[in-house]
Image 1 (cartoon, one colour):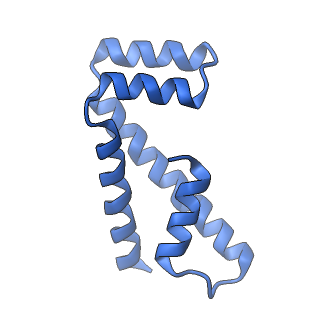
Image 2: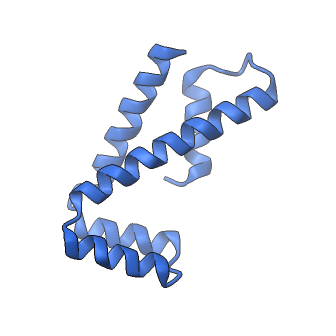
Image 3: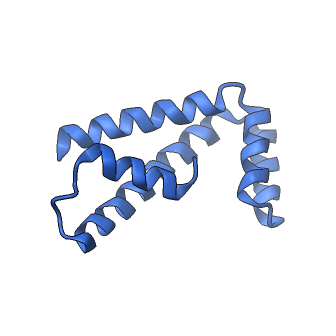
Length: 98
């Protein structure tokens, strides 16, 4: 799931359409950044030291998002499920706080 898809899902599910457009965009950007940070932290926790080193080399070498995602899928057996769980938990947390 890319950033645009995450942003649209958050906006749709959180029901923030009654806010002015600029406020919606600001809120979605902030939530997306927080969500991506949570995914990153969980991903790094699941990788061993060798995996984190490999990840660092990929990112420093200019690997694209698809290459990085394929790498993570190959190193973390339940990567997609892990990401979906983080997204679901995040949306529930946001719904309870808005």
